[in-house]
Image (cartoon, rainbow, N blue to C red; front, side):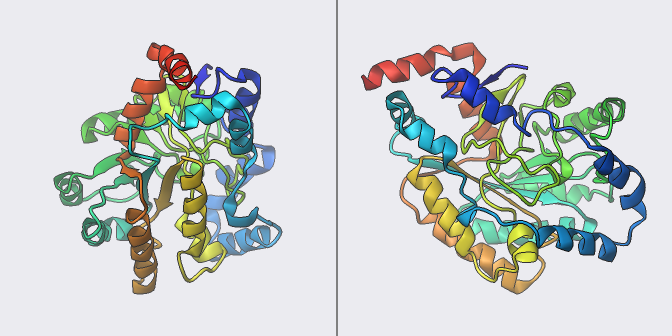
Length: 337
């Protein structure tokens, strides 16, 4: 499958290797297949969390969740530095995009409260809804649209089996496409950010958001080492670039937004995309909502930020860096020389 990034013209084999390593086509191991197909559905959530905690204790993430290798390479190439300086329209230096994965009916009920919080900061975000797990309140969907926010689709039923086999995926993809059409959605994120971007070409989406730059706490950790979107076959891939709220609140037991702020400062210095995944299921306490509000205040007060919905970011990236207009990249380099 073909991919396109602004930097692929500089060193295609190297960038291709980074983007494909545990990004395009991670495979379910026998242990993964056994767990998601036969064990997980019958394990009480307390047992699942105990298994996860034992795994988390063995992990040592890089400081501030920064994997600097790709940005270091780009910045040490002359053309790379020039491309970075022309990624966005003036006067913008970085993009920020906020997304939410709604995993339960209780989380769906909290959506209006979080929308009101975001409106205080002039923020619009996307809400990725699980279509076949809980009753989807059409009134909440209307509230999301009326606020100028975006609706996306979050997998099928969040059971972890979407990518267990190609046949299973294709069967579910047909119904996911029906929901995409019914909701007028153009974006998708897979539950637990399991991902197989070649199979996902069967989805009728404009963008996917199931990859990440660096996240060692996921079932398929890997990461695409890109703090920018890229074209993955028929759609735009939008990697998230900040640790998820589950990681911050549950795994690391943090009580403030310091980790998000530090990674954001690094992304701004490198003209990256600040893309956050939170869940109304974890923004379930006043103290956590206050942490989120503190981060929104910090984010919206950074100079040079361009706030976009995921569909707007995907449209911009496709227009400027997509297959139909590769000449833009050459022209950007030429203008810089």
